[in-house]
Image (cartoon, rainbow, N blue to C red; front, side, top):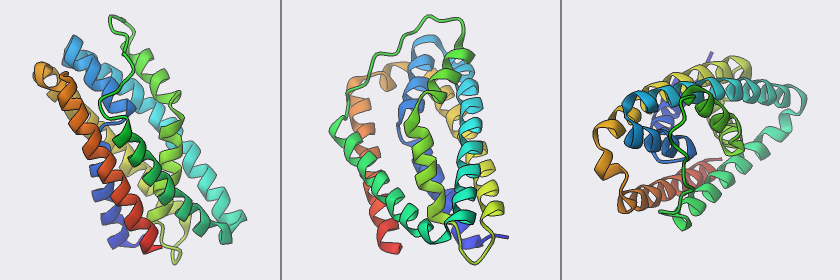
Length: 201
């Protein structure tokens, strides 16, 4: 059982946040703009497997916290909102500055998996994001499970679209000015999302 309004809010927020640039998006863009759509899609598949592992870890961890320390859950929610604000400010300040992505590898699936799994920010982000949409009036486990599956499906669809667009828009998306603008937009969105969630709680 879930709060349908909160679930719709989760879908909208997930769509916005998955669409703005982060380490995974930048890796997929780098591969697809340099080596074509197929390379970007294979990297995305590796990242999807890594995200599935992270989602399972987050769902199990948050479920344990809810059952063991229910009073601490609001602290987790507020801490998560603060973390979103921190990520937004970091993205704004680092706009246009990205580490060079090594290309030319024929093991795109492996590269995508290890890049996705070795990114602790992704794990921390989901741990901060999911609790914002849990209704305490319903059991937490089913809500976390539905959100985890929804997040993964949306990540596959959005990352796949990014890989395809990257392959067809190589010149524009690889330009430093475009990446600078994307980083500024993503930073502003994350800060606004964090502030809204903090005030709601």
